[in-house]
Amino acid sequence: MLRLPAAELSALILALAALGPVRAAAGGAVASGPGADPVPGTLHAVQNADAVTRATRAARPARGPALTRALAAQHYRGPAFDACSAPALDTLRAWWGHSPYKAVGIYMGGANRYCSQPRLNAAWVQGARAIGWRLIPVYVGSQAPCLNPKIKQRRIKAGQALAQGRTEALDALRASDRLGLPGIAPLYLDMEAYRKNDPSCTATVQAFAAAWNRTVRAAGHLTGFYSSADSGIRDLVRAARAGRAGPADLPDVLWYAHWDQRDATVGEKAVPDADWQGARIHQYKGNVRETHGGAALTIDVNAVDAPVSR
Image (spheres, rainbow, N blue to C red):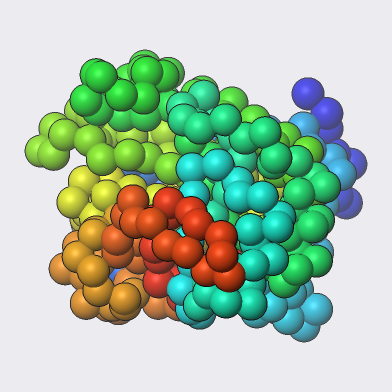
């Protein structure tokens, strides 16, 4: 494990204090500090140890005008799509001028990433950004132990959720580095829909996600959490409002899947409008075929009011 000098470690702590507050339940309903962990007494083990293994990123300045402007520059409000495999750059060029979309989700890594990615590399990212596309990087790691056993084979193990979350966060950071994504880019954890009303399963998922969030954020990135509005998102919002998850454990952005055909980031019963304001993505329809500029893709469609990678 690499260790930072005291001055750099102090800078890291200041940076985490600056980037740490998240948009959660309004009115101070979210608890912070000791005792606010999804699994009481366990998340104190998730410290900044993972961050110091990334010395090139760890020593971040406290949020000043320049960093505030950088964060603001990451924000995007408008339509986005995600496709299972990164589209050809020629397709992105055709869609840029003829579609409503200006942001695209990319599945950058994870043991449960389903589709192959023959195009997705640093050159593709550079080309997409040169066209003007904003990127939404997604990591599909281990999934809930109570997920349908026929899909997503790698699972979170209840006794190993924290360690798995840390390990997979570091893998996500390596994937981000390989793609040449900027150090402040938000990285999104994909947690597919799982069985409802299973407290043990929910606690395991939330411990894993908390460790992932802490590790990714310690490296300087914003964090996002994608899941079904009816399971992962609902459970996370309830944990936040009940004080079972503190700000350090929660994502900066919520990306909820609810295919209700509503092109909006508010009005979702699972996420009160007061929560995560300006940090929400709504995937509102999926598996649709669209053609723009003569190029066709099968996509999921999203309304975005959140940070993306620019």
